[in-house]
Image (tube, rainbow, N blue to C red):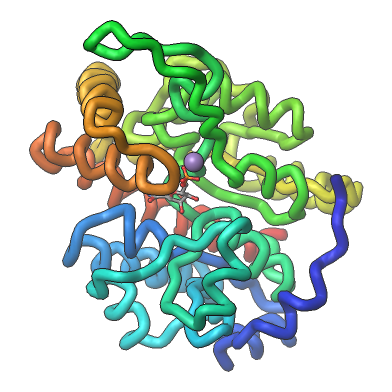
Length: 320
Ligand code: PSU
Ligand code: MN
């Protein structure tokens, strides 16, 4: 599984001066993804969250490096106008490992998902990356489903490339748990098969993205920052080649109660199947539908958890 950093990726990087300076001096840097800005949250909430996540990284003593794609280059660290463009432009491309070359060759404006952001971070020498939730195994990926009209749908095989990237790229991803719109138990199994440590922080239950808990016991857990930093340092020093998934629960005051989240997600997932949504469009579509069904309460949780993850990642980067 282990791969050396693809040298061609390094040649494509445009690292912002502040980020380059911090990396040279060995100061902590945290990578942030941009798909949650372009596809994960509505405007203007997305722009507020992007700014607040960068501010949270700074407050915890690290330099933020939001990643995006433009003009055949991978930008590591964005200026304010580029953040605004990502938050407002209608035609931002969602770029993951399989679509990286296509987006670079076409020269388009692109937002990076977890997989593409990990590739960029690794090439830049950034070890810690904060996001909201990773992609994973979608419900129905492995089972035959029965549609409302009685017809049978074959397994979709929709498993996010994020899981494969965590297996291949030694970057620590801080999230609030696999997105609750996924088959979380199946996602954990695939991560285990790929040798990716999944570690809950401050709780022995796996955080449930919108809610503090998913109702599933975490494969591993640590008490807090110091123990998380020890585990991460040890994992990276072993040189296994894989990343680590650290799961930090959304702050209790901002969570969407699990029963509400489950009901909205069940409905949104059924609506997506009815509407024939699949592939890369599925995750953004379901997130938006959940926001509608919860009268925006899912957005409050989503916002809070992203900022909370960014703050924790900043402290972690400073600690390792
Ligand atoms: N987390 C969020 N909102 C998002 C995503 C994560 O809170 O929009 C994005 C991430 O970029 C993740 C992607 O990598 O969704 C997964 O998409 P897919 O399921 O198509 O692999
Ligand atoms: Mn997918």
